[in-house]
Length: 439
Image 1: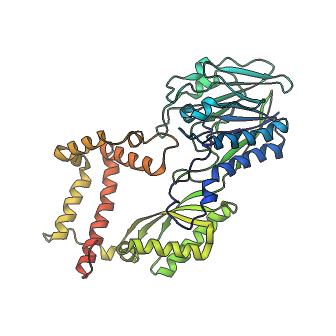
Image 2 (image 1 turned 60 degrees about the vertical axis):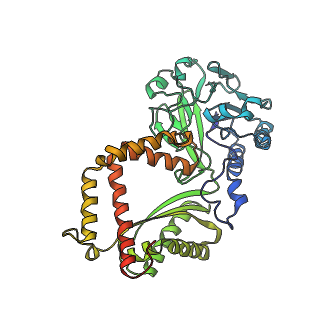
Image 3 (image 1 turned 90 degrees about the vertical axis):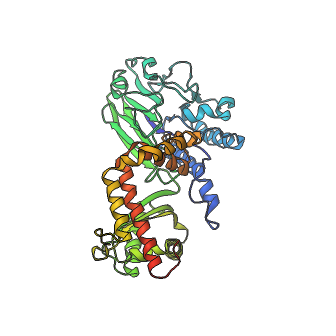
């Protein structure tokens, strides 16, 4: 038999970081998760699968627009009309949603119970699907302990929304381990919650499909679902199908060999041409990080806002609506010959010596009055920033929360940030000494 495994649809979730552009194709961006769902349905129809398994998080938290639920029902009805059954479990975001609590599914869509693991058999297919939904957002127990052993003579599929191996990058909901999944004897485990596609284990397959559509800059690369063929001997086919509509791409561009602006322009276009080819024509939401030692360093840093505007104009000229700049990060450094003197007692050298001292002992910043103030500020952060690691969080909020957490707990990370502080201070000093108004 043949089925498709998908998860983390987060229907009607916005794409964060692009709305600041007044001329951005907002309808395309706002409707990206809907178009990705339509692509999922079309994949099921084209491949004439028997089942669609959805491993949680159909919705995006406390979403209340009934049109979202109506759109989902209409799409699933296309599958039911073609004889394709749908199995789903509710994840942590669904448990927050008023839509999932009040929604009545069409006949042929089976939402597995949140009270216990529910096993549903399809005699004609020779398959049984085991799954359990979340009763509330924070499910901290290992749900797999309630999943039954595999039923002999049937293809056994497990459906679970879980943080496998307690990944620190995602909230530790329904934590589980490969050993507990393997002990059940199933032919395939369809997992949700982690937004990156990952084959955790080949035999029997334990697989995260990832989400259908990246929603911010930390959800880069191809997003989609798995097409799976399986029989009593195991999985014979396991193919990932990209279904995303807009692709997030983080480009790290080394400017070490760029002495002039035209060389930078050529390097950027070459890298973007390759990224667009890999995206198969999908628009790119671009986070661009410039690094390396380059004579362009002072020009780029002194007029960073102007540099970003110029890059946006160049992208529009070359690529139209195919590339949108979400963020520009400047991590370049000046050529070695331009490195400032760190010896002596002049103001610049004294400043650099102080920064060097902090880099060797970054934990000192967290001692004394400074550390006390930082910890007091951490207690005043909104909950959305305190829970920075939670899957599916707003991109900007997650980034701010994560940075603050690292500031308080990770001296090595703090040392890296001091390098960026040094470059910013040197750029401002350089501007001031040339008679310009320092920022």
